[in-house]
Image (cartoon, rainbow, N blue to C red; front, side):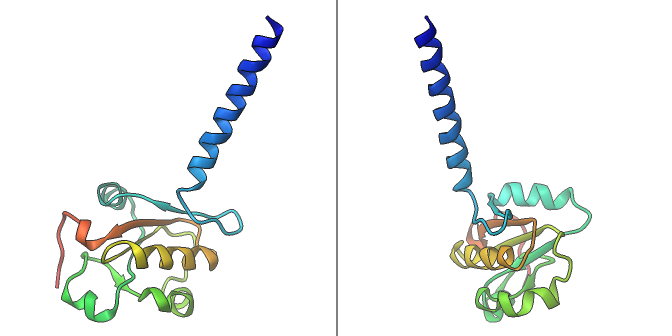
Length: 135
């Protein structure tokens, strides 16, 4: 009986650790901060319920002017480390990041986290955005 109880506890602990490890794969860590991967629907829902946020397009300026999500600013993924602090001075404001397909937005999100931004949400690419786009 006592051995059964110990086995159950060990299994519970292992299950909890596996769950926590799975969750940790959802973002990139830097000094306790993470960026969260979400989908376009969740990003839109969150942005609709926030008074203040930044919507960051991590594509090139040429791609941005071909079409972007309304309200977005453009900082190409390879310029985030140089430009983000000047263009997004508040590091605790939620930042939603996208690109074309989701690769550059991940790079940009990691860069933001490394700069100390505390609430970064990466939601993939504009190709998966089912809502309004402006040119």
